[in-house]
Image 1 (cartoon, rainbow, N blue to C red):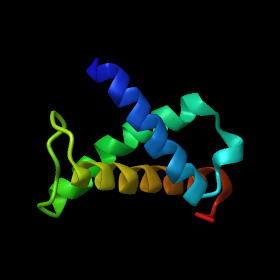
Image 2: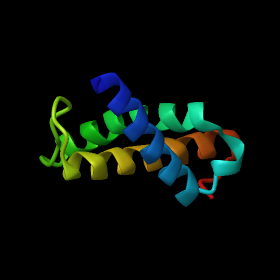
Image 3: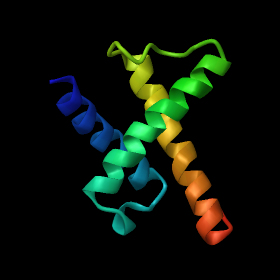
Length: 87
């Protein structure tokens, strides 16, 4: 059951980040899920660097915030590599 929740929440986080970064038209639901899940790992790493990381084995609002921030960072990096600008 945790896998299904992870995929749903990852998809929502990735979708919201793609709307903010204006890349939603270029990627489908699969890439939204990937961006959300990878963004959660990046966000957890960044949060840990600042001493505010969330545990990956529990669900928390701060974890969702860091996942969203991580997804934004991931999309910014992808845009910078593909287009030469963050947008």
